[in-house]
Image 1: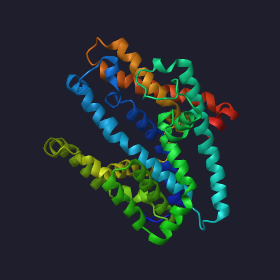
Image 2 (image 1 turned 45 degrees about the vertical axis):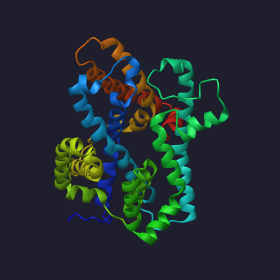
Image 3 (image 1 turned 60 degrees about the horizontal axis):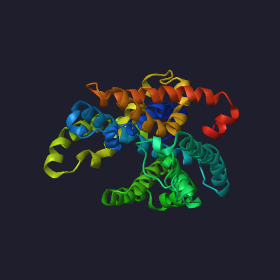
Image 4 (image 1 turned 120 degrees about the horizontal axis):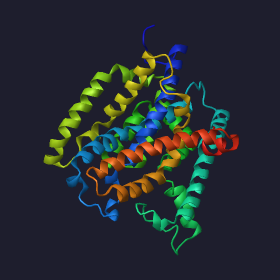
Length: 357
């Protein structure tokens, strides 16, 4: 069968479904890697200064994995989320919209609320002052109010990584706007959002762009993963060149070149995943790992604050303390998340409220 960029055949739909099922776990691992970067935390509170100069090996490794590769995870999640909302919908009616909202309440809103409340209890039990690397918050000081509580749940989630779910909930509610915008403006709507994000560099606009791009692919029935596979060589080449040039570009112009070419990085990750799914017919990721993706994503935020604090105190006298802390944090969070997911999924109530399944 000849490959097509349009989603018509049953075989192509199955392959796309297999790719999405496979890619979830690696993307969640990338999110953990992103949030485990010591350079993104107030590490000076632990007495570590000038980490970029004193730990060049760690700095190089964490730059590539945490600040380059891992930044592809969230945009891909947004693309897939927008795509799946309108996937195989022939006509977007009020009834379809209501059914989709009910489904998303179960899979997004309830788990979001439960994890935020659980984190609130954990912060009280552990003691905010014992979480040295946490962001400053008024939730636990003498100025506590219901406004600060609502702020820490819905505006700036106390479970930090859940900002993605919060944004996704807002966009799901707004899907009629995306639908009619795409129907009238076609590719021009994502193009407009892309230009706005390029100019303003806004996280909100960026979220809208990636989600809207997924909506566009679904409505126009475009197999975006097949496109990413077709241009995989070009995308990888651009990524390699941008990484090499970025060092010199930053020294001369003080700008990061790779940020403006992120779409090629995202295309590369999707293209590789689609290629592997098409090449190997068996399961690329065991169900145990694939099913643990959401739990790992939802629970890991607090551990990325506590584990570095613990390991740096233990290994501070060792050469390569930063790299060891980085690797141990990632490994323990992933293994712990898989185990926690296994426990949660054995109970129907826990599974429904913490993973939305």
